[in-house]
Image (cartoon, rainbow, N blue to C red; front, side, top):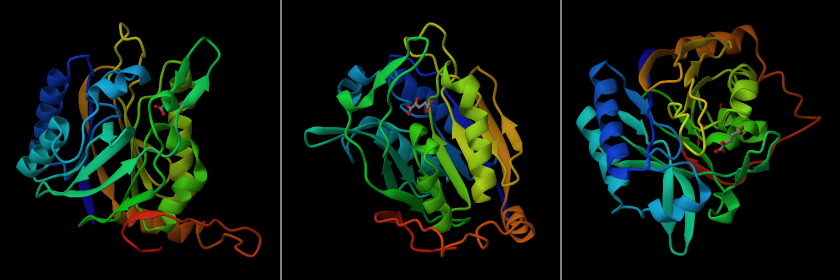
Amino acid sequence: MSFKVAVCQLKVTEDKKNNLTRAGEMIRQAAARGARLVALPEMFNCPYLSHLFPRYAESYPDGESIAMLSAAARQGKVYLVGGSIPERDGDKVFNTSFIFGPDGRLLGRHRKVHLFDVDLPGGLRVKESSTLGAGNQVTVIPTEMCPVGVAICYDVRFPELIRLMALKGAKLIVIPAAFNMTTGPAHWELIFRTRAVDNQVYFIGASPARDVRAAYVAYGHSLVVDPWGRIVSGAGEAEEVVLADIDLDLVEKVRQDLPLLRHRRLDLYSLAGNNFNGSDRWC
Ligand SMILES: O=C(O)CCC(=O)C(=O)O
């Protein structure tokens, strides 16, 4: 069984309305080109700057970005991994991905589990925890095609989280992200290809387009990687919609030819997961 996916590499600006309009257009374009699942980047409705997150934050279900995502999923009849937005819940703000079905109903949400607090060579400093709280769930969403794992950006660096998703049945893992010009060139492709090879799943990395005038410059290069570690589709730096075919038979074939998951030595090591969102199916 195979199906088309699309990644909307959107140029994110300070103007929230403009971001929503542009995202809506790109989702429509993706649906018109045959995508059944569409992904947006991390913080697609606001600049990626920790101090701005509370200002752009919205609550479920009334927030305007959330309403736009639900309507776009319904109109395009697509599964939509709605990138992420700052989500307000009581006195807390989270970096949250809302995931909608083709009927526009919310299927689940992932709140970024690992907050990006770093001080990198070259002067890049980020402290998400200055304004954000952390989620505490592993998110795998059932769809008609296959279970789909969702995590956000820095989460992809943690192999245990991704392995739990694969063990939970995910065959496709979607990562709304916004790597930067320090870690992007060094690690972006490397991490996505490695996680895909280790877990024998498809991976989507959805980045904003690069804007060199922004205070935080996103790397771009959104990509789709297959379970053999090949980049089957990729963007450049500019705004574009990237499409790719997901072949679920290839997931099974790679797992049969090279049975990594079966060859694990569970007598030597184990991985315990506590909190799951979504389906219950272990592979
Ligand atoms: O892990 C990285 O290099 C980038 C992470 C990041 O930008 C984020 O989590 O928002």
